[in-house]
Image 1 (cartoon, rainbow, N blue to C red):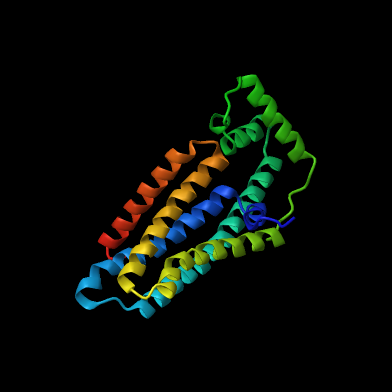
Image 2: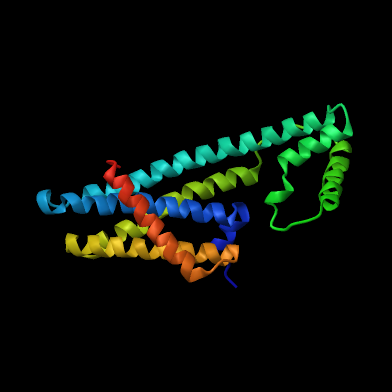
Length: 224
């Protein structure tokens, strides 16, 4: 039985983050291909230049996003270590519980509970924290794999954008097919997002499509 590549990706990166990277890559590719329509009539379409620019832009942003992911992960781990040390150095149990409440507000949880339940949760966390010593945690192999996944997801979205130009002789038709394909993928991304989050797939797909096209229009209008 062959494994699904999507399963491998979601094993190393949160599905929401993965779909967010796909959305970003699609928007980048659409910005290039839709923007090229503005100069198509006057100057003609440089197919080779468009292919190189689309792939190059997505690969470049894939690298940037991967680096930002590493920096964000490092910041997150350093922040958690700092919180751990502050809890250990707290003058009283009340102060330590307040730190935990500020860091993990129960109001943001997908359930509502009584004050006594929240207090019990924070006391359990405090008990776990008091039994261990704060140790600096470096980047793991999983973090590096997740960064590679980020690079891959942003970069690979350029492939559906440029494939029509390699298969269709007419640049005008290839451009239309490319745009249509990317718009369809926006819908698929939103649909998949809802499947992971428990939302309404069709509604989410349409919302993602409209949002993606709006962001593309803003990027083009601002000279992106």
